[in-house]
Length: 153
Image (cartoon, rainbow, N blue to C red; front, side, top):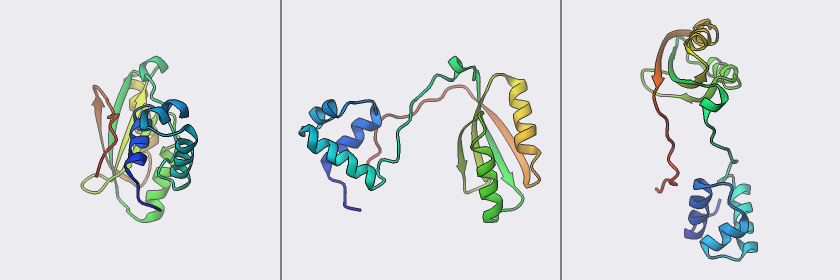
């Protein structure tokens, strides 16, 4: 992969903040012709720097009135067990994100549920019922915000 220049970083910063920008608007903001801008965006996609686009939703509007982080420790840490845990949990509709961690806990599972009964049932049925799980801690999320600023290294 080629190194990213300042124009690439400007494009990424603009799209990171608002992926809905039209190519014409993006080109104007970074000072490129629309055709050159589109070529750069396509190259960033081909190089897998841009890996996709997503949208931000109000979970309350969808019925997800409670969010929680579930810390999970496994009794077995082989690749097969870890991969199976991730493959089974990630597609569940309650799961917003899944983090495989180093340290005391093996996973953090960010979930959204309708109410406390839903949370309890999810933890019991989807997490603690698994033979490889030996410890679970659940913490409620009071507020969640995600940065719209592109990290710079």
